[in-house]
Length: 227
Image (cartoon, rainbow, N blue to C red; front, side, top):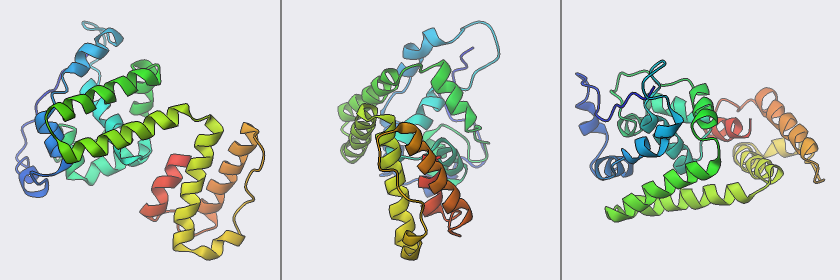
């Protein structure tokens, strides 16, 4: 059942947002000028309207996915960042002290409410159109770039996506410790998806256990994205 939550929950700490999220912050501008209620209309058919447990507000769930598209983070990292990044919490319509969702909720939302990527692309595209309409110039360029990146990803094969993510992870690791190049598992050189998956698993295992830098945020985010 849809539970609409369009306004910020009253909180004694809400004034923090006026201090730590400046007026020119991209997410604040989008939040103030873009009406996300169109999400209810687009997803209404995906919910039972008068029966069952209350679902997490679909606008909030969509905004999590929009943040993922903009910042290119994994489910785990987007939820983790929303614990402490006040601009994220503000954009998500949460009080500063509110608890965040479990990352698995995003997987369920995609599977149950967004059964194909075209719907997500359409919703992000509609958000972009609304941002353009409201003349959010700086924000528009960032969102459009993120949307185009998402569209390009949808055109890639699973193996190409894995290769791209593995490449980004290696680049970050090398920037911190170039000596690990000689210790890295050998790259997959064929076009067999299963072999690419096996290579990525070896790469993840090496960085988690053998590099000593897996918990550095700069490394952890692309690592989680590959996992």
